[in-house]
Amino acid sequence: MEGLAMLGAGIGAGIATLGAGLGIGKIASGAVESIARQPEAAGDIRGSMILTAALIEGVALFACAICFMIQAKF
Image (cartoon, rainbow, N blue to C red):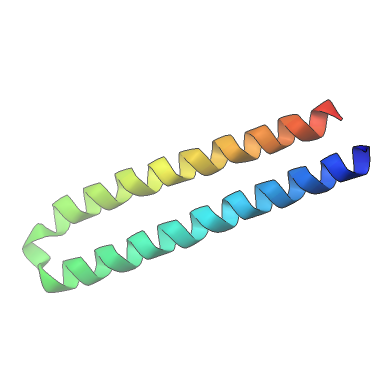
């Protein structure tokens, strides 16, 4: 049972970080494209991008913390 808990925690942390990386990549891609179309709105777009990326990263951090808690329990 201990081995499966370790495997599940590792897979869960990996999927969480993979999803966060893909999400932040899509946000950055959209922001760069938007700034290229409207350079005068670069400040607003950049601020929204950073806020959204931080929220996604926070969710990934919580997911990894829960996976490490599962790993420590078993």
